[in-house]
Length: 267
Image (cartoon, rainbow, N blue to C red; front, top):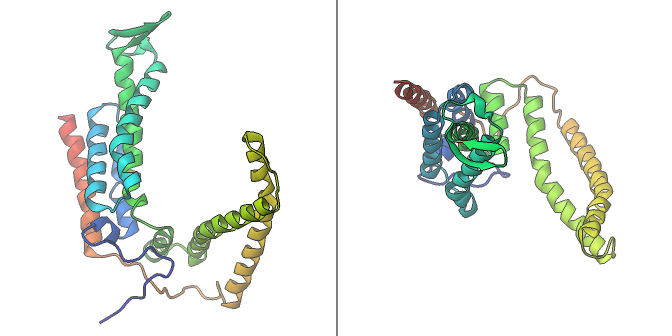
C-alpha cells in the first residue's frame, strides 16, 4: 500500500462529498475549455444562460464554498448580469438591432428592447466565462496546478517550481506588510486621517517591503542552489499529481454536456 505525504503548505484534506476538490486541476480546466471557446462565438441569450446555470450548479454541488463566496454566487451574479446588461445596452447602436421597441428615452437617445437583448447576451456570455473559470479556480491551489502542469503537460519543473515559490511569497509578503505597518504606527510614521494620510502610509511601506522582498528572494535563491535545483532534468515530487479515471470521465462529461447544450439550442 502506498501512502502519500500531505502537502505542508496545502489547505488540508479535501472535503468529503465535494468531488471537485478531488479531481486533477487540469481536468477541471480541460472540461470547460470547449465551453469557453464556444462562448466567444455565441450571440444568443439561451446558450450562455444555460452554461451559466450549469456552472453555478456544479459549484454548488461539487465545491466547498465559504459563506461570502456562496452569497456572491447566488446574489451577486444576478445583480452583475442585470447591471452589465443595462450598461451594454447603452453602448449598442439602436439602428443595428432588430427589435426597435423603445423602452425609455433620455433626451434624444432611445433605449430599445433590441439593445437590452444584446446587452443581456453580452453580459451572460462574460459572466458564464467567469463562472466556468471558477470551477477550477475555487477548488484548486496554485501549487497543485503547478504540479499538474509539470506531471501531465511536461512543463519544465524549473518553471513549475518557480511558480510555486512565487505563489508562496504572497502570504509571506502579507504578513511582512502587516508587521511593517504596525512598526510604523508605533513610530508615528505618517499620522493623521483621511485619504492623504492613508496614501502617505501606504507609500511609506513600499520601500521596506521591497527591501524585505529582495532579501527573501536572495535567501530563496541560495537555498535552491544549495539543494542543486536545476542540476538534473527531472525531480521527484513529495505530493505527486496523478491523472485518474475519474478525471477522464469528468473531462469527457464536460465536453458532452457542452456539445449537447449547443445542439439543443441550435435546434
